[in-house]
View 1 (cartoon, rainbow, N blue to C red):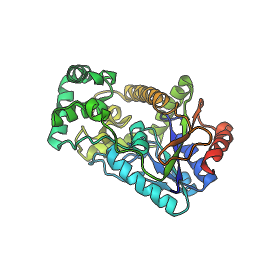
View 2: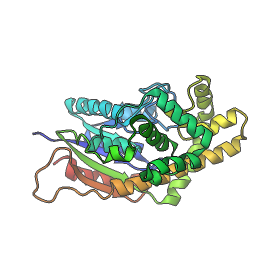
View 3: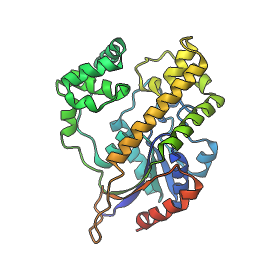
View 4: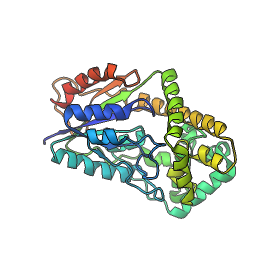
Length: 328
């Protein structure tokens, strides 16, 4: 079997992943494929820091702004779209460069997904209504009482909390049991070459704060105003994107702008911390096959953890490291 390379770039928000993806695409003749769950939604351009016109001209980009905010993205749906884009890139003689901070999506791509049944929409709505009624702390406590494995979730991680509740309600089985079952497995014919950005926390937080202010200058508040005018269900993923709840609260008169900005920055820093922890424990320790072993399809062939924000100073080292595996 011919095994074709896929470059995976992960890390926390504001770490420089998108710039790295473009540089890798330019170096290897690649196509950038989005793996950020919020950058899928067409209504959020500024607040999700989607690639700008200059980057779009420098390299092909796929799966950005492809879903309306009225829909719910999922790991399974994204994986199917990503595999189509990966196949298209290989068919065009290009290297797919999959980039994003949604760890679940990246793991789904590389390892496959457990067969968790589809949750009916009425169960989703009921879960979000209960979260709204109880608040994050009480909702988490009630969930953990029924599924103790979910104690690992932060009370602020409402997306995963409601997902666990939905599955439990819809199937009668905890999400942890479904996740423990064997996944469908990695896709055949692909080898994954992973780069994880692991910047120092202080530098990352500073960049998160500065970027939030820059987003406001670029029109983030007007973007949220347009989104709010659509009258979408507040439980939809697009309505929970970083900065959206805080800026909506300001638009509805619930808090002054400076408070909304401070809360949005805090939410972003909290999310970046969770992302960094996930990547450090789930991907950064992956090792390539032992010398002399065959190149197995679906395997991770080298994981380069970079303890820095991405800058031009570290670009060449990353490209050299990838060159040793991607071109072999």
